[in-house]
Structures are given as C-alpha cells and as structure tokens.
Length: 441
Ligand SMILES: *[C@@H]1O[C@H](CO)[C@@H](O)[C@H](O)[C@H]1NC(C)=O
Ligand SMILES: *[C@@H]1O[C@H](CO)[C@@H](O)[C@H](O)[C@H]1NC(C)=O
Figure 1 (cartoon, rainbow, N blue to C red):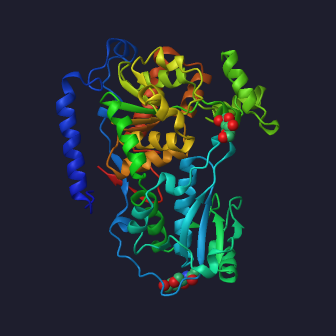
Figure 2 (figure 1 turned 45 degrees about the vertical axis):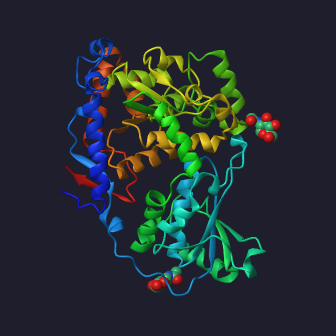
C-alpha cells in the first residue's frame, strides 16, 4: 500500500539528500563494508539495515490529513499540564495533556516542567521548546494561550493528580467536573487511560502536538547542530542506559562489575529497590527486565552485523558504567563531552544534554536503543515521522533467554540475528501505535 503523504516535498528532499549522502560516502561507507573482525564473527552477512523490510510505521493519514473539527465556541476552562521526570517523559505527558485539553474542550496553558531531583536544575518548557512555533502549529487543533486572563492569572490552578490512576480511567467522568467547578486546573496525565474513547479530534491534537509542533529552541538547535556536524559520518546513534539510577531501578543483579560501578549502583538504590536474588532474579532477568551492559550491547551489535569500525555516537548520560565493554570492540565511539567545548559541556543541564542526544538521534543514519524507555520511544517515533527507518530496539529478553538456554558464541549470534532481523523486517516496536499506522511495503 502506498501512502499519499502531505509532505511529499519534505520526503523527496530528505530522500534525495539521503541518497546523495550515500553516493558521496559510499567508497568508505563502513555500513556497507563489514570489517574483517565483524565478518569473521557474523559469517560475512551484510548488515541488518540492508535486509528487506515488509512493514513500516508512518504517521497515520487520519491525523496528517484530517479535516479539522472546528474548535468549540466556548472553552470549558484552562488546563495546565504538570510534567515530571526526564525530558522525554515530560514530553510524553505533555502530549497526553494536549489530547486531554482538547477532549475536555479546554484551553491549554503552557506546561510546567518540573524536574526530578537527580537532574538538579530548573529547565522549563520554554528553555527547551520553541513556544511560538508550538502555538502556531497547534492552531486549529486546540486553543493555546501564553498568558492567562487577569482574573485567573493570580491564582494557582486546582490540582487534579491522575498520574497513579489506572484501568478504566476516563477524563470526562473524572476531570471535567473539577474543570467546570474551578475553571483552571493542573493535571499530570494518567499512566493508562481510555484513549480508545477519544474522539478523533482529541487524538489528532495529541499527535500534532507531539510530532509536529515541538521543536527545540533556536539556541538549543544551533548547539545541537554543531554537535551533529562534529560527528564523523555516517554514524549510528546508540542509546546505552547502563547508568546507576537505571540499574538500581531495574532491581537486577550483575556479576563482574567493577567496584566503582557497584558503589555507584548501591548509592542509587533506595531501601525499596533491593535487587532480586536467587530464582526470582533469574526469572526477572529472563523476562528481559535487566538493562544491557555495554559489552552485551556490543555483542548484539556484532550479531546484527554492525561492523566494528562503525562510527558510533553515544547518546547517553554522564554516568554510563562499564563502557570499556563497548569501546574495546567498537573503537570509533564518540561522546558529547569529547565533541563539545568543555565550557559548553559544563554549563549544560541534564535536560539540555538530553535534548542534544534527542536531536542527534533523530538525525543519525541509524539508531539503536538498548532499552525501551521514553527517549527510545520518542526518537523511534520521530524517526518514523521523518522517514528514517534504520531504527532498532535490541531485545534484552531474547538475549537473556538465549543465554539462559546456554547458547554462546556463534550459536548465540545466529539466534540473535534471527530475532532482530525479524523485528526489523516487521518494523516491530519501532513506533508509538497511537499516531502511527503500519504500512505494507
Ligand atoms: C466538546 O465540544 C463538542 C462540540 O464542539 C461536543 O460535541 C462535545 O460533547 C464537547 N465535550 C465536552 C467534554 O464538553
Ligand atoms: C546541585 O545544585 C547545587 C546548587 O546549585 C550544587 O551545590 C550541587 O553541587 C549540585 N549537585 C549536583 C549533583 O550536581
């Protein structure tokens, strides 16, 4: 099936420039010429990106080409979305909030980006995203105001916390009454909700907000572009998430870690996050709950025939542990801290760094995620939106299942190749189904 895109020019230009880039770079393209070491390890297969895909995800037509339902004449009140966590989690919640505001026929106020303690900073929405662009792009999808009317601006919104609600949660039943009563409320969207009950115009507002209306501020985009330009091309962006907070959160046990890593993980553990032990730990790991170590990620990259001389940009935080496990095999690895000037790097906040990783990753030749986190989902979706399909999630589950069955070496590589090839061919797990549709190629 062929999708008629509303952005044919954009697609054409990006296709052409991609093609041009490939032609210009092909004599030395590491993606096309597996190095001898990768060859010997993966029986000389061509890399995973040259496997023929049969399904891909693209933004759905009902959203891109939707005839806009007129906005209600009268607004039911003002909604501010309060967002918490890392940059991409805040973005996800904000996108949800835009859908909710439209669902409730409310007017959207710019969100509040709260920042989790470990970020230690105060980057707000306007520090990261281009507000004017957002408001312009949301025209017709939902009413947005920059300033509240004077009679409301002096008071704090009434807080409706939906973040812990699960299951049959319905915003019209649970939140609309508070909105009508207080006229100005703040919400943190629920983890799960009845989006199936949303009218299409509310879903379209969510999709438009998340994928068409958020772009980085001019100054951040300039910085991100400098970083992008400094990375050797073509390159793979690798999101490794083997950081103390993540490992502590996962409640997984690892053997063979350095004392420094063990200390960092212990320091990040709360009392309620003790690691599983014994049989429970084994089952937990087998279910794919444990973040991949850099050496495990490197092993899987080899299994999917990513040559060991590939340029890799590490889209990762500063706390990455056991990185030698990757860099001893993949020798062309670059990091932000090496490419940015040290003043730049030091003055940057966690959100700013996360924004740079995001930007580089939605513009890289290929993207590989080792986890299924908010950043990975957002990047995969934006890449699908932009027609970039060299995106893959490494399967922690397959890795732990195969290793627990005793597979190793070449056999393990072969099994991992099959699983990941299948995922790539079927476009599995690479986009958010809400705003994206499967297209058969
Ligand atoms: C929102 O407005 C539309 C008409 O524009 C109406 O059909 C719908 O019921 C309204 N929803 C709420 C929650 O007020
Ligand atoms: C957090 O910020 C405070 C005050 O700006 C500073 O003293 C402290 O060292 C910072 N902590 C971390 C972990 O960066």
